[in-house]
Every structure is written in C-alpha cells, then in structure tokens.
Image 1: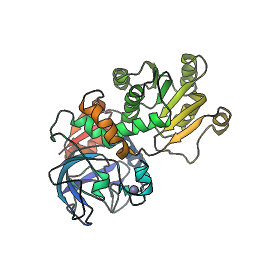
Image 2: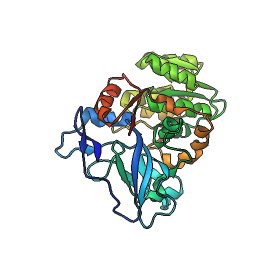
Image 3: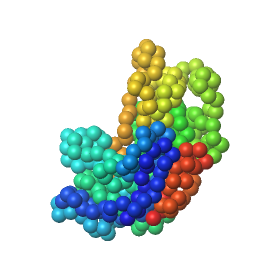
Image 4: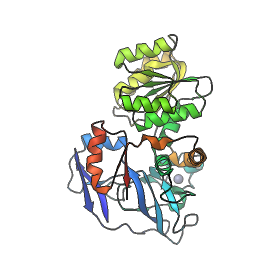
Length: 344
Ligand SMILES: [Zn+2]
C-alpha cells in the first residue's frame, strides 16, 4: 500500500510500505477514505532530525472497516468510522473519565511502529475504544466536517472548555489556523457573547467572521495586546483560547486574559516553560489545556455536524490525492492553504 513518510526537514515522500494488517485480536483494519494534514505536522516538517527509516505521518482520518480481530465487539466490517488523533482502550481509569489522550494502554498514530492516517490503510489498535461509527455513507456531503472530529474541531472545543467559555463571556482566540478557526465555532457554540480573533490573513479572518468572530485584531505582539485591552475596557478577555503553541502566542494569551480569567491552550508547546508566570499568578489566571481527548467529544459534537448547526469542514480549502501530499505540506507551511484534505 502507499503511505506518507517524513524523513527530515521539508522531506515528505509518498512511498510503498508494507500492507496494514491485523495483529492483535483487538485491532481493526481500516481502509482510509479521507485524511488531512495537520498544523502540528508542520512542527516536524520544520525541525525533524533526518532519519534513514522515516516517520509515517497522519493522525486524522475517516475510513471503512475492512476486517476486525476476534475480540472486537462494537465495530464491524463495512462500518464507516472516524478515528481520533490518539488511540485508546476505552476502559482504563483515564478513558472512563473522558481523558483518552492519557489512556494507560493508548498511543499515537504513525512514527516507526504504527500506520499513519496519511496512507491507504491503517491498523487500528483497541478498535472498540478508539473508533466511532458514522451513520452516513463515505461520500456524504458532510464528510469534510465529520473528518474534523478526528482533531481540529474537538481540539477547538477542548480549548474552549479549558478556557471556561460560557454565556456572557468575552473569548479571545490566539491563532488563525484550522484549530483557531474551530475554536471560534466552539466558543460561539458554548455561548460566548463576544469573540475576538487575533489574526492577519484575509481568507482566515473572513472565515472566522462567518464562524462567529465579532471582532478582529490584526496587530502583532505588544500592539495586539494593547488592542485587546482597549476592546475589553482595559480588563482583558475572560477566556483565551491559545491555538498556536510557540512562546510568543502563549505570552500574548496570558497577557490578554483578565484577572480571574482562563487560558485554554491546545497548541503544542514549543518551549519548556510557560511565559508570564508572575502576571498570571497575581491575576489568578487559570492556565489549563493539553492534547484534546477528542474521542470524548466526537459523540457530543456529531449531532451538531449531522444537523448542520456547525460546519467546521469549511476549514479545508484544498483537496488532493495521496500524490499531492508533499505539495500539501508545502502549501500549508507557506500559509497558501489553511488545511489540506486528502481523498483516497
Ligand atoms: Zn484507556
């Protein structure tokens, strides 16, 4: 079968790899129908130490179950399924409390040992705990939005929960990538009264507005912080959703949160420490978040997608086949595309 392998900085190849197959009795074999490239794939794309073996890529996919192991109960051959960006058993202490990204027997897609989503098929460990069956056909018009449930929509929702978004509150979104845009959807869905989007790209700002952003701040650095303070009567936002991960974004996020407010961070931190420790301490600012347990959110968000109340699939502005994946990485890295969907 063919799959995407990353060997080093800006070195993404589509190659023939060993066919995915069942190994454990709890596995399912899924033929991928749609997948995508993630903003977080761009971190290794710009920093990976070169290797001979390469890393299999992709952690967002929808597909059809081709076969299941003897111990699989809830997932059946022929089901259309969505996979969250981490796999999990669904039964351990952390899975039962809805924190599947900390599953005691779970893990992450791709790398050197497991299949990645940006390939033709995937062996899915702990299929019953990991996969969610979708009640539609693989070519359904809502498929782009359903695909976002594997990561970006659930991650935006997690940012909103961690930032304690609620009715009457002012939310501010740091980051105008696909997760930031989904965070706008999530903030609106949870009842934020105002949603301030920090972003500069015209296409992303336009989409943020259609998703529910009420104000746009296009300044950078200190000027952006000042502008948000002005917009909030000098107080800052109640809820800040940090959807980037680098130090500057986190510094901005902490600086625009009001005393007693919360920062929900879902951008993968690129620095070992959290900036602005003293101001956040004196302001009693909650800093929360982490890898979103999207498996816990799929069932909650699914009805809103199926009934058309939210349309997170609009973050995809480019579609490719598997041969176009390397160029898809380039396009996302150069901010030419917001998010690239792969059709198989
Ligand atoms: Zn678990």
